[in-house]
Image (tube, rainbow, N blue to C red; front, side, top):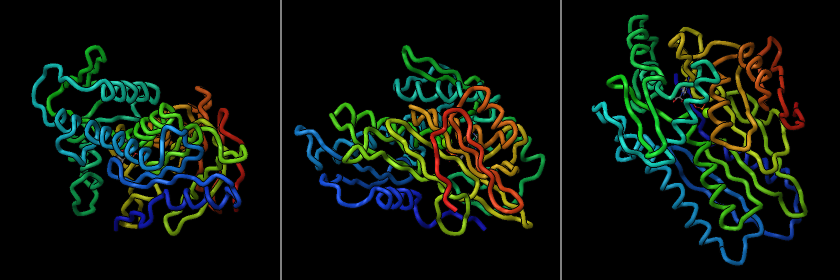
Length: 343
Ligand code: AMP
Ligand code: MG
C-alpha cells in the first residue's frame, strides 16, 4: 500500500521552528503559507522594510511562485516544461533562461554523481507507479524495466543558455524536475525577498529550506532534520542555518510495500529499480537550495558507501542517516553545521 504522509513536512519543521524560537520576541513575524509546484510552502519573515507590508510581500511571493509554476511544473500542462515534453521535433526548443539554467545545473549534478541523479528518469518513475497517473502497485518485469531504461539518459537532452533552449537528441525523451524544482523555487522566493529588502527570513517548500539573517535578537534560525520514520513525525537533529539552504531526500515518506519489501520513489537509473540500501535520508547544506535539492537526491541514489565517499571527496556538507539493527546511525561530511541529535 502506498504510504504518503498525511501531514505536510512544513507543519513539523515550522512547528519546530516556533518551538525552538523561544517566546517573547518584540518583533512579530509575517507568516505566509500556500501551494507551489505540487506541494506546500511556508515563509516566516521579520523586520520588513518600510517599502513592503505583509500584503505586498504575499503578492510578491505569489507572483514568484506562479512564475516558477508556469515554467517547470508538470502539474500545469501549459508550462514550458510540459510543452517541451510534448514536443516531438528535434530542433532547439526555445525556453526561458531560468529553465535552461536549472536543466544545466541538473546535468552538472548528473555528471558529478555518475548518472545517479537524472532528470530524464520519468519513464522508470512512472513504471514503478510513482508518476502522476496512479496505477496498481506491482513490481514491473525485467523486460518492462529494460524498455523504460532505453528511454532515459541525461545525455539525450542538450541545453544552451544563449539564447536559452533545450533539444532532444533521442525522440520521446522527457524531463521531470521533481528532484530539483522545489529547491529552485525556494531560491527564487528567497532571492525576491532579499531584493525587496527583507533580510531576516525562512523559506520552506516541500521540506527544502533557505534562511536569511536571523530571528529577533540575533537568535539563529534553528532547523530540524526529520527522523526518517514513516509512522508519525519526530526530529532527528537540529542545526543552525543562517544565510544558507538545506534540502533533504529520503525513502521513508513515499513508497509502497509488496511481499514485505519497501519500494521507494527514489529510482536508481542504473538498476532501473527503487533504491534498496540502508541509507534512509540525506540532508545537504549549500548556499543554493537548487544545488542542495539535486545533491540530496543524487546522494540518496548512491547509497551509504558511494554517497558518503562522494560527499567526502567533494567536501559536500551532508548529513546521512543510515538504518542499523538497533536504530539509526548518523554521518556528517564536509562542513555540515554543528547539530544536536534528539533521542
Ligand atoms: P527528492 O524528494 O528531491 O529526492 O525528489 C524525488 C523525486 O524525484 C521522485 O519522486 C521522482 O519524481 C524523481 N526521481 C526519482 N529518482 C530520481 C533520480 N535518480 N534522479 C532524479 N530524479 C529522480
Ligand atoms: Mg531533491
